[in-house]
Image (cartoon, rainbow, N blue to C red; front, side):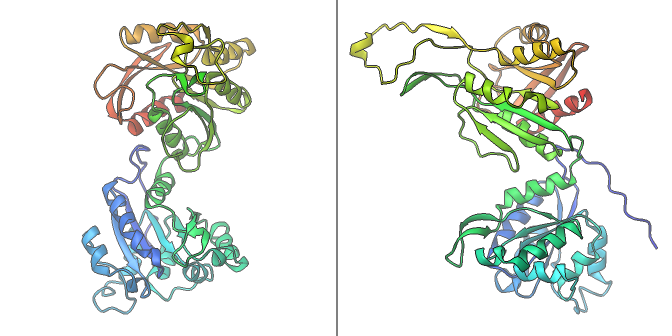
Length: 416
């Protein structure tokens, strides 16, 4: 008997690169979405192989998947060409991960019963790699006790992971849970299975975005932060196995998969949300751009120019220094947890200001960046930062904010 395949460690920023992934497509209307799933997996660097049930071929032709993957599609157990070398066993042996999407009620039931009489269930039963199922079916089928029992059997007995289903308007004209998870969410779920789980069992709190300090119901003091860096950090921590809470100022971003998001408006609300959770955290990453000042007396109605004149004066008060408060409180306790990471968005003397902030706020690391630099400021999809620690500085090369987030977490994991 051959020795079990040893799967190499993967970069958490790109865990799908080079992975061999088998996508099993069952016979539901959502089979057409598997085309986008395969495309995204391939774009992420995976080598994708597809197997299909006969019913799935009623919705999407094998030629479509062959064109997308560059590999033959496994459809028949008794094909003289596909099974000349027991192809389904070879496919199962080589896989780093198998995904069944859509996983219909029928496919889930047959697999839970240990049946292997089609291309998808046969490969799944022969595969020793992790299994990810993405259910898709009518809302009542999903809620049926037998379906729930079958999913439980697959997760508890076979160790399968589940992504979705989402809720919404279904092809059967019902509305509710049963819709196939979005292909991008399935890809992220796959990435989390293959990524190193070096934050498993850890609680991580991330702050993101700006704060809006009210002048009146229509106006506020704010800044240019979009929250992209903080959201990337929350997603990266979740990918690496952490239980993540994201305290977010007002942004226009989709919540990361599987992350608890607490929406706040201003600095004091952000402090309250953090204070309620701070002692339970292993790591806090303060990526939010918290306003330093707020209006002393915001109006409860919109101020008119005729009332305040053309050169109004707004009296300001200081907002709480949230990171400094946490750092000093930790210092007073003589505690090492939570590990504290702050951000310094500067326009000049970046590292000098970051080093001063590191000392004054009693934190473990400051992530410093020059917001005037092209491709590294507010609203961009890329960033370039310097990690400032008591023992020295580490420059992180320019990259996507997702990639930079993982490099920041690499160091945070070491601090933990």
